[in-house]
Image (cartoon, rainbow, N blue to C red):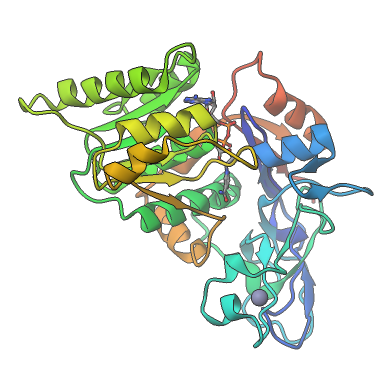
Length: 366
Ligand code: NAD
Ligand code: ZN
């Protein structure tokens, strides 16, 4: 369905034919499959990492494992007892399926993304969704309006990440916000910050091409090209100078919130130095197991550090945002491949010498 790649992400929006359905946390494991039609998946950095390294962090691939977790498709069959979707529905696939047991405090309290035994499709031992047909628990399929394209359906997954971040970071009207990293997550976060009314917004990256792409998406954003040879404090000072000069209010302006979308140690350090006192560094990026942070900078200026693990309860809201025209998410797709060329799509995503942001894989066969 979709997979994302490090320098670019790929999403795949097949028609719902491939969704496997089963009731959410209920006894009946009704399995429905998505029907014929088309579907889409986009590729994500983690898919590319699994593909290149046969693993990611604690997860190792020991057998054949399908990639992809950003997908949608068309329902082609449903199992017994399934009532929330029917054959012919176009659906988005929420790839993380928690245990739903009464003994699981996280499932019980609605923090289901933190369920310790969540099945995440594409993380071993679960196969991913970049397949022509897929069987999925029905409760974790979300019917979408007819107006939504398969590209948009697949992109609901990265949007869910940034929506969860936007809500947890409490982005607000008129809030100065820094976004570090202009990859797929950074630019989706940029769209969310813009829609939240944040201003001014500055986005950073090493790549001028990615920054130009971000500027094309949101012309009001200000860009800063990171030079890793500079010290974090110097980079942070220049970013604050940029905020101050674009605000042009005769006072220093620092970002109240930094949305960290790289997972890179030096970028987190920059965020720590650049963010206003009593502000928040919200870390979406993931990286090494252990990362050094400028501890006393956070401590003495009461800069909070907060994290995110995927998403919870975001699909319905994300669907309303896209279907309602609030977020034009499909604009982050830079290239589309047919399902038969999924390997080329992942290679394209992984190829740092070729510009890409989000790569979409579409299956239009019946
Ligand atoms: P990506 O690798 O495509 O993009 C990261 C961007 O950061 C790149 O454009 C890169 O040039 C830029 N960058 C690298 N070092 C930088 C620096 N020092 N300063 C500024 N920019 C720098 O990845 P993505 O798909 O956009 O995802 C972003 C991060 O979010 C990744 O770490 C990914 O694993 C993570 N992620 C986390 C979750 C979660 O649940 N926490 C979910 C999805 C993605
Ligand atoms: Zn659970």
